[in-house]
Length: 312
Image (cartoon, rainbow, N blue to C red; front, side, top):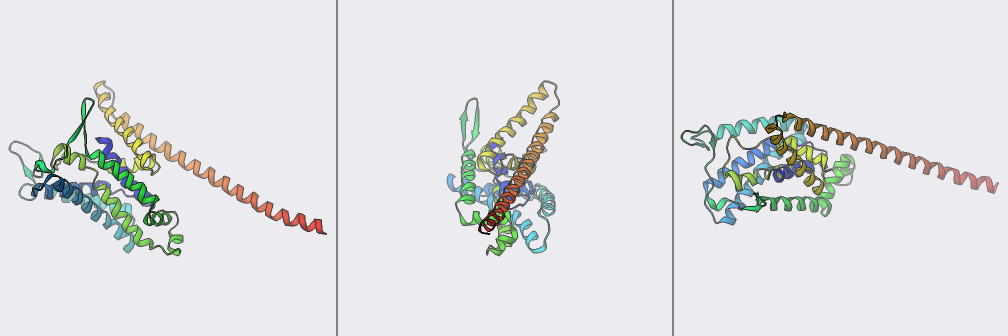
């Protein structure tokens, strides 16, 4: 279940990376999306399929709108998406905390310190799938379709081609007729929409409401998984399962008297090592390409020279 949420966050980050955009605002986009999806879902009662669909759509739309703010600021004002997303994360956290108060959009049970939105009607719940000794959120199926959709969008559509070409060279894409500023805006909105679905499995199959104890910290995790998976949906999936395994292992270490911070150190070391390895491989490949181009140029020069000497 944790791996499923991690995977969606990783896909959201990967979409930004394809445009060389560092979407560190995943956490804020996810908080806003899940909160408003829980509020809207808790305020209505619909047939099961329609109710769940409405909640998912609200989450995607709110996440996309919140992500598009950073895209707009980058396109219109030249503000780095990193700076704007950091501020938007803070604003999102404060806004959700304000609206979650009793008498606004939240409620507090008697004798409890926890604040939460109204519980979703059972028509807005997604069933769990029994697996071994536990249960898996059925939203995992949606996560699989998100990964497939991501691959198809990037590799089988004009939008995906424009996105990748703009990420490779902003000026070249613009010279080729691609509306690069529009691509930046749309990419940030799309990344935010995917990020908005990060906590849907927990909301629809576990808690059935948003509370102050809802999971957080998906931004850095999503970015790390996108790096580990090389922005490929299958690679991100393996990275998500590995990351979730390490997180669960932290609890076992605690029981054995070993500091759980060792897991955090391991995760950071793994990401750093892989990033350094990717950079080294990239530079080695660039040098090899330069060497091949240089050798080809020398051969082109030497052949005409040899022919001229022969004719003479």
